[in-house]
Image (cartoon, rainbow, N blue to C red):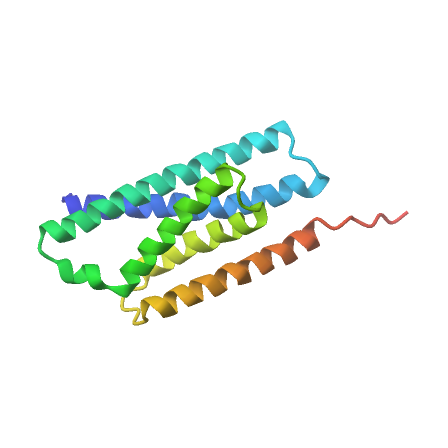
Length: 169
């Protein structure tokens, strides 16, 4: 296995951990809030998911830098001008900044969760959609719109799921 294949594999692993972690963070946090409190077991599960997210982010960022460095070393700088690549790097930067803000409790959880979930799926989409011909601005506008759409969808799901259950007596 060459260095390129190694970096691609690790990049995919990081992305898989991130996408899966973000998905389960939303599922488990919503489920944990059903009774109004997060008990010790639920907190432990969420901590494991957040650790998985951090590991995925670190792997994705390090392997991404490795891929960029490999492009430079191999004289393939023209790939560095791809708007899809710049959008992905911006989204991953937002993802990292969002993780810091969430850890420091400087952003509302609903917004941080929507940014995280949207960013991970956007990175997955941009990394796998070969031949996407869209400008950086268009990709970023769609990304921002997607964050608000995902926030609204999560709000609707939580409102429905967390509603008081009606007991038939």
